[in-house]
Length: 150
Image (cartoon, rainbow, N blue to C red):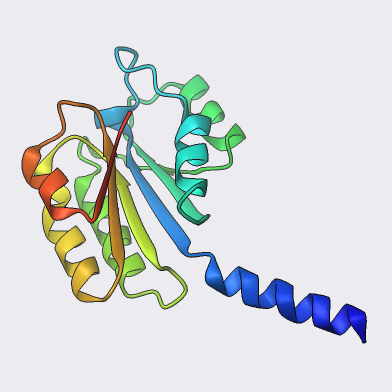
């Protein structure tokens, strides 16, 4: 009997923790000059909920060591053979916006290319988070419900 109560409490608690989807604009953010640590980003997001989807979009110029590092950190590398990762990333952000199992949609980028998909996610009732540097576009920061500057 006690075990069933514990399981119910655990299930209830899990429902109380928001599920987060994170999409990272690799060519824009994972550059040597920024030297971001993906584990630190995970730690920041875990304060806000449970990371359920973690995808890093990389172009054909991504070095093997970066792909390996992304994988070792528990993220899914999405390899794009064209020079621009924005369209495939935006499509996945939109998909997360319609996913009933996702409560918060987050993007890690610097430019405002993803402003429209964040607005759409908000229309679908999702909380939105942008993660980026001080040089992040103001329009992107002003669109999101929450901004994390790293």
